Length: 387
Image 1 (tube, rainbow, N blue to C red):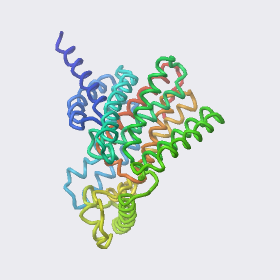
Image 2: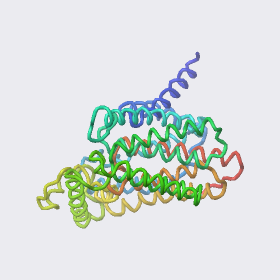
Image 3: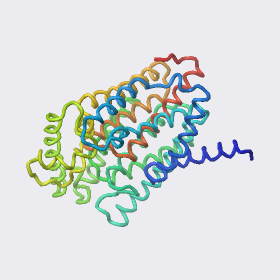
């Protein structure tokens, strides 16, 4: 095997390891990324793939604001200036597909990793008697947020990829049910509520009246199965821990608004929130205070209101490109990207998933792969026009 072939083999191994490791090991995810990213980017630049790189202007505006603002906050310059680095997983995934890899291969590896994670969580909850499943993650929210993105990708594939064989559909239904169960035993309310909402919309959009009836029957079944079980009281906002969790969030949100009012332009910088929040909550006892438990508030706290606006522009640009492609060509990858984005944004309403390394790396890698595949498919069909 020639030296160049060995490097190519190693790069592919690292890419596949990275795909399966999301949600299983942040260490493997980061190491494989650090080793493979320079090779992928160098190869992409040699082939001129950077010339039509999507999302360049929105990303540049957001990152530019962060770099500028890093000189006006009392945080270590390097840490603040490069706090956006997780979005590098977008070009990582995008260039990977544009260099010849198929997004489907990575999607299968995502499912493999999610299945392992789900089985761990189900075992913890059902067999080991854990209060909430966390899989191999640091907490139940990180665990559930990542799995939910896999679930909506599976559902999008099932409903809008008409070329699937009956065998593949059966496999996807089975894996989707397992991962859904994994999310459910996390008892992470916003993730579960958001997932129910998104999947219900997909089913109704695809099957109309039949879908509406199915969703209603399934909803009644789940309520009957869980409403009187003490283990699922979190889902119905009952129990002492839920009261503490809710009151903490309300106090954090109120304090976060106060911080934003005092530091509206550049914010206070990353990882400063825990040091200031006690002052803004006026000594209210907080069950947790690592972040604002709302990704949008936390973004404004870290980078100011303009920083939040620029970041929402990134989401808007991503949604526009995906929607435009889906409307024009019916590309199911584009639809999947939109649904993943919706789910990710819903998760941010009660959690700082934009700043959760495991989840945000997974999200951007997934979106990069999807965008790369969308452009590949559209160019082959002759339907793509650059924005």
